[in-house]
Length: 597
Image 1 (spheres, rainbow, N blue to C red):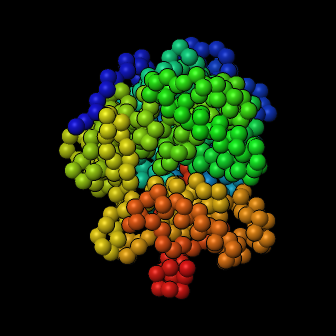
Image 2 (cartoon, rainbow, N blue to C red):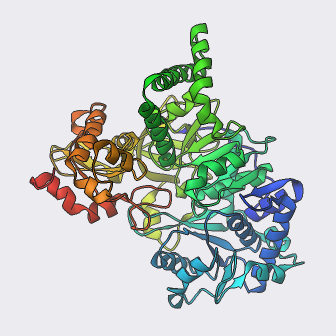
Image 3 (cartoon, rainbow, N blue to C red):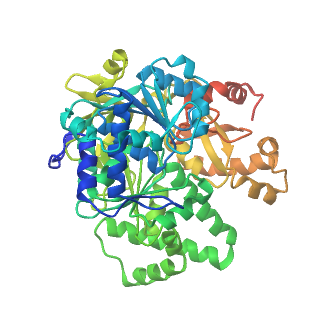
């Protein structure tokens, strides 16, 4: 049966450009901050948005034209986004990590007329495919200068004093196309998801309602790629509530430093980062040994007990309260302190994550709200909240959305957040939508007490030679939690048992090499029997948590970690399973024909 909640009150704006203009005229203070540069106030942002809108219009951009953005996660991305909305354009995000060929596909397929790109490096990438993009007329560089491009300063000068923003925003129909967001392509060429202003405004309102942000301007840490719809949604939520977007500097080595400086109240993130933090903290505590390891272990156990009781509205004994206070002071508070003084809420989705990882953060006093959605649903469908959370689920449906389970176990969704279809791909649209407006997610799940649980993905199901269906996601997640493993990809379709391809964690592998007295070269480690024994020990321990049919019987260690550059990971760090299977088919076959291990 469908789960339907009350929708939030309708926004008093008709478009995302309208949201931006209302926000910059209503709020004061900092709209955006980034390390090493002056804060951007709401007044600054308002001026930038209006000048960018006017500048684009001066170049001949008219309502409905496609304007692309190819840029990392910096304030200029958000300026360009809202400026383009206010020019009446349809925004087409492009992942800044895309290859020239991938950029060419998105720009060509969308028919982009103009592109705002980050710097000379991205301009050089575009230059390699520019001749095959006849629709692309204008290139604007957002930082610095680049040959064949006008600068952001030039664009803003063109639009200074213009009233284009107000005129075009007033004429926008809420059901018109706001953006075409191309999927990250885990199972094939990316598809352009057509999202309307109404889709996105509704979803922003639903998030604000569930996170109780009205009247509480948040400070939201922004490090996810802005070509991803969730990161865009974060910016819409921040502006609508008068919040502050705190950007990182783009260096993963300084991510913790940036978070501490930002002092966020909310951190949207991906499961892989949470898994790495969990692994790092636990392994460091274990490596310390002695009294320190014992203190941490006891503190964590008591913290999990107290956190679970709190979520369930139960009291704990005075002794547990005392133990928790001591353990928190000596160990757990250090994890919380690293995230800043505002006790941030972590929001995660996009891929499976083991309940043990979420329980770890709750034990440390850091709430993790797991949610679920797709690009096709504006990244939204369900969300756990501070008041309603069930670890192991992805939460209840957002206000006004409906979720039900099909006869084959597939999750179906319906509501104002569901997209208008795929750009120039009616066949794919017909495949994903069914009668009554239900969107077929491709994910398998169940609804228990109103909470949605994801059990697997239809296309990822492994059907063994005995006809058993195995969803590999949770097994792979459990393997990634171990200290030495970075990525794990199970295989075994039409075979009698499961095998796995694993990679070594680049940060932890040198420690393992030192511990075993072997070469730290990744390729050498992949073939070393001592390393294999250590990895098998972890795999065997994970196997015990799963049914025999789901257990890994053999494995291969790949000579390097998976990467975006090699096309094996999406920009949100999801594994492109089909790419990995194809690239390492020989390694998988060897695990069955006796030549592998």
